[in-house]
Amino acid sequence: MAVTLNERGYARARELIEQGRYVLDGRDAWSEHQPSTGEENEFIAAHGIGEYAKWHLGVDDEEPPERKGHYKFPYGDFDKVHRCGVLSAEVRAGQYKYTDIEQAAAHLHGMLEALRQVQSA
Image (tube, rainbow, N blue to C red):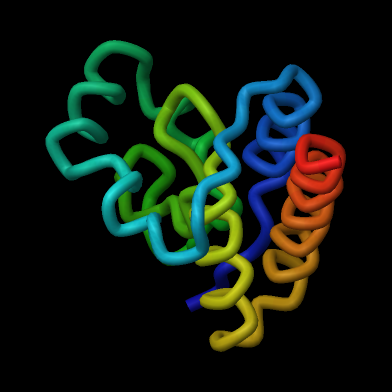
């Protein structure tokens, strides 16, 4: 299985953060904030698999691009980037040695931490 960085998803995450579309939630909140299977299916039905792809930092070349399984490491709720989703992606990518995804998630994490510091100042 070759899982690599989804450049479109990474660019979309950076763009959303720059637009102020993020949630500075707690590290362990992803299980509550991650979209459910039903929400994923509704999003795909309404917006297509191409838009769904932009909400993931990784792609798996062993799965066809028209299947949900092709997309790995989600980071948001189809509206905003979630800090907990970025942290989850960063940790899991590190565990599996997907360095490019881990580094991208670390960059997003850094962007969000800088915003957190500004808000708490």
